[in-house]
Every structure is written in structure tokens, then in C-alpha cells.
Image 1: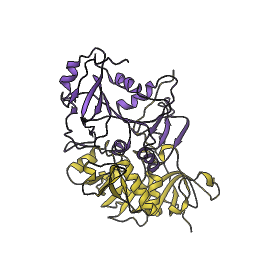
Image 2: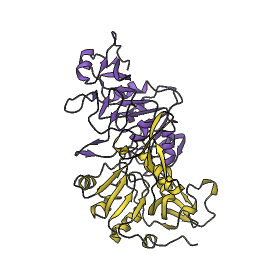
Image 3: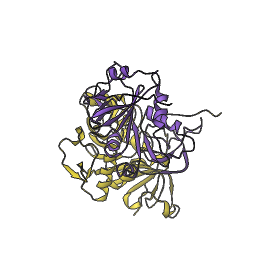
Image 4: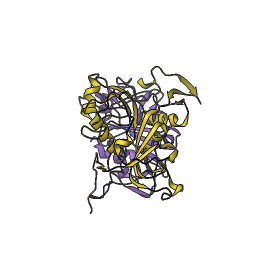
Length: 218
Length: 232
């Protein structure tokens, strides 16, 4: 069965490593923070200016001055730090953040990503996404395999305006884990109960399928 | 030099039609809300506003947008605002969308006397169109220029009569860089204290960057996305 959003977040959480600083984008990526493996120490950075992000506040304890990049009220863990936007992006551009997880509207087989604009329809702006994808060494995209009209979001080339070029390393969807190597998607794992044929059918970009495709362990 | 002004209307004196204004804040967090309300009252028009976001429909810079006081916005993210989207798609409003890190650094550079810098952000995208590309360490970068403003308006938690500022939590965001980049920088603060009452070890923005300071009469501090968990 295909994963739900929580399943995708849980699978991405398996990529975390002790001591990492991690930036999580809005949407599914935010959920990853809930599934950090027991005993592992990971610090979450939010580009509006906080390291050491904690869970949402208890009702009645929200602070308008303390939010994440999704403008949601948050708390901080002991040892947290606040800083200005230039310092925040120094952390990102300077590659002090080990992992970036973000959503996408399209990803191409050479690692291009589009997630900020649909010409004539939706223009929200790129926010920090262009800085993040241009600099991060390790980028995982969390998204659904297809869009709402059923078209594959995993393409040979993006059709929407790009956010960054040749930057995405890994994609986790409700169906599969894909790695991008040398201009092709490589099928690494499939969601529990999902057939390889379904993944092939729903992937528009070049897909390399090994003989044996293990199931994700969620 | 006396930097303290008693009323927001004195603080904003000299802001005229057609000027470029920087406004601190991320979403509605750390915005100079008293000054924005005063700009609405003043009715100043054709403004170019540099601000990470454009407020929401009925608050923050959304108030100026509704009265068509803004000619051009320089921002990184403008979702959450229908009137903005309408004015932009109809061509009434000029919009320059900039990667958030580049926006922050362009303000910092403007205040720091650095005319331009190279960044990898935006290479290979629309943002890079018309910009010089150069390879450093095997990686392409684009040339981004500094930003300055006729006035920068920032919001701080505490300030002293020398103009030294301390911000609270994530309400800091763009405020320190914009404070540096304004020809005249106006700070509205929640608490205004005499010189000597703030620990010099913990000043975020040194007073040299601030020309006018006032205590904001009312901070509504709207929350855009109230997210909570239940006590168990």
C-alpha cells in the first residue's frame, strides 16, 4: 500500500544522522521532526532565524515572536539560538547545514527541481528554497509521485520554472525511494506492498530498476 | 544627538511619494506595525518596499497594498495575500522576487559598503537572467547587487536612547540588516530605556545604524499560523 504523508516523513527520518543540523521545508518535510530515531541528537534549523527548534507550544503558550519558516508558532529546545536572516543563510550557503528536506512540484532526472511558480497561475515566490538547493550538499525531496491531475512529477525535464539545477540527490514519495545518479532515477526501495510496475508506470523520467527492489522498512 | 522621538508621525517625517523603504519582519513576525499604520494614515504613494513578505490581506504591508500605496515590492515570498496576487497578475504592481538569502545579503551588503557579491542561489533559474555568471571552486555563481533605501523601518524588542537595539527570538529576522542599509533608519521598540540600561555585551544592532527611535504605542503581534499541541 502506498504511504501516507506520515509514512513518507518516517522514511526520510531514517536518513538522519546523529549530530546533523537539518533544515526542513514546509509541508511533509516538517513532519520529519516528529520521527527522529530514539537517542539521536539532531538540531533543526529554520531559515527565519532559529537553531534548535522544538515542538509546537502548548495551547495558550504561543509566542508571536517565535515562529518557524512556515510562520507556525513553535518552541525551542534547551541550547537553541536565534540569529538574523543573513547569518541564517550564511549557515545554509556555507554548508554548515548537513541535510535539507523540501517539497517539490517537479523533479527531473538530472536533479533539477521546480517548486516556486506556476506561470500565470500561482506566484508565491521562492522564499529560501533557491538558496537552500543551490548550496546544500544533501537534498531530499519529499513529495507525492503524481500531481492532483495524475501526471507524474518525476520527469525527464522540468516544465515549470526551476528553483535549482542538478541539486536533488534523493526523492521519497508515497511509492518509492529514488536516487538521482548520472542523469537517471534509480529505484532504491518501494513502499510496502507497492509493485514495481506501478512505480514504472507513474515515473515519466528515466528510471533504472534493479533486479531486486527491497521494500521500505517503516 | 537626540534620536528619541515621541510620536510615530515625527519618526516617519520626510518619507515622501516614490521613495524606497525597507521594512523588517518575516511574515507578520517582527514587523514595524505602528509605522505601517502611520504610513497608511500619511497616504504616501508610489513606494518601493523592500520586505521579505507582503503582509496578509488585512495586516502588515497588506494595508498599504489595499490602498495602492505600493508601486513595487522587492520580496522573497508573497503567498498568503490575495490582493497582492491580484495586483501582481494584473500588472498593477511591479514585483521583484529574490531568493531569501540573497535578499538578506543584499541588504547587509548595502549597509556594509559592499556593492555586489557572488552567490550560487538562483543559478540556472529566472533569477539569474541578465546577471553575470562566474565559476568559483568549480561551481557557477551569479552576481547580486547591494540594496539600500531612503528609509529603513525596523522593529526591536528593546532599544535605548542611543539607538542600540535588542530583538526577541525570531522577530529579529531581517531587521538588523535593514537597519544597516537605510540612509535614515527608524526603530520602533516595545521598551525604550535610558542609555546604560542595556548590557553592551548583548546589543544586536549598535546605535550607529539608527537615527530615530520611538516606543510603539501598540503591538498587536498577530499570529499567522497558530499551531499548538494539547497538554496530556
